[in-house]
Image (cartoon, rainbow, N blue to C red; front, side, top):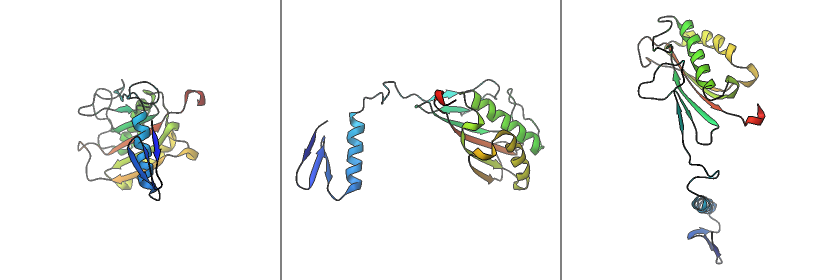
Amino acid sequence: MSFTQTPNVFSLEGHAMHRGDPQRTVYALLVGVTAALPPSGLHGQAAVVQHINPPGLSRPTGYTHVTLAPSGRTLYIAGQVSLDSTGRVVGSGDFRAQTERVFANLEVALRSAGATFADVVKLTTFVTDIAQLAIVREVRGRYLQADRSPASTLVQVQALARPEFLIEIEAIAVLPDAHQR
């Protein structure tokens, strides 16, 4: 990596940076640092997203239940609905039964990557009837610690992927270092 300087401009491997223009300077520094990294990243391993479809969840069609980011610390869980492992709807017409199943499915998805509800940092809940919010809160309270509630969004929608679905929840979790467990 080479660095040159003149009175008002300095350069890092050909990326000109102007004094008094911090945005251009930061951009150029990032480009230079990124260019200096090996193609495999900082840890010497290729960045590969893991796609996980754990046993205990239905067979997905056109999506993956769980993806684990290349760093191995951020987990993205697709919206879970009230399906059992064979793909059958649980609790058709019963909001409470569907909510129970959705949280059970989220638990299976989290465990597939070694995570728990304590690792969840964001939940997005989609419901077809906002009047059922008390049920969502009750069931959710059995899975989440009150003092560690994740960032959350609740949205009422006209319909979900299938007419019998009444609730869907997606999650993002951050896995702690192994020594923090």
